[in-house]
Image (cartoon, rainbow, N blue to C red):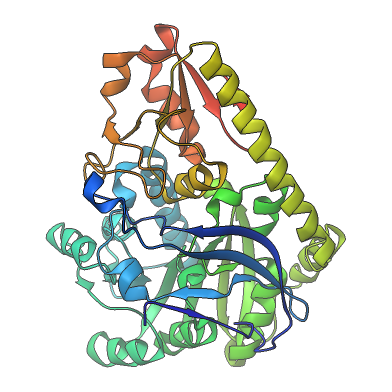
Length: 412
């Protein structure tokens, strides 16, 4: 079955889920058509967002078979200078703070092309990647990063522990949100650890999503949207203690937690209750905050369309930069098609020559910007906007201007 619908919360198993935002039925954000012949039978699925009244977890109820979503994937972390810098800092932080050496095993779940693990290898650390996308796992393996082409769960954890031994560190960056059985995933992370090991999890932070109106980060792959409050509750259910929580700027605002088994370290950090209190004060545990977010999303759509329509009427040309999954949520929700944006460009060679899902905007090489010199570029990969604008300085020098879509449309 490709699509099914949940009726209970992933964190607390209750059925007190309330929908606060609906994008209608849309195509999968990473299902890029290869030719116009594929436009007419493009599968679409409901994209509705729910709030759990009991535990405050924000989540999708519609679940797409992960074999469909992830077995053949075209997002790679290695194409971004920003992410490369992030990974270098991340690796150095782990090595220094956890005193990692050449005898320590670091396992990364959803390791993509192995970019982070290669940084750790440079510090002499043993690494192992676990990556479900066959094509991406092959890229990582070819680069010298041992990678198992598997989905991760508690059963996988036992197999890896038997074949490779326990891990000093288990890393899960931007993957916990992709998992339907969240508790089993966390249990697997815990089971894979050696006695003094750490689980380190990085997730997009719900508070930033709400405050910055980052609704484009909502798509079928992202089943959950986490606050510190919900992470504390989830970790409690499987016996993990959060020892540290860092807020990061990457991906529009992320939260990185360091956790260990509770029976080896006691309870959560004394700093966490204050974070949970701040979230409560900001409304993250109340349904009314999400109703306000839904209104913000609708207002943003009107503002962005007004800007693009005005530029179009004035005879200005606007194209896109990037073909990220988040951009496809924005394009489809706002109804931005080739009339307003005739094409977008992307650095990822696996995307060039394809079309965006739903709106069917052609994806062209980045060099097209200088070839055509459009008046404006709408940066769909806005989380990389500083990097993109720096790389496109010649376009700016020729008079080109950029549009940052969120949290409110802004022309630079």
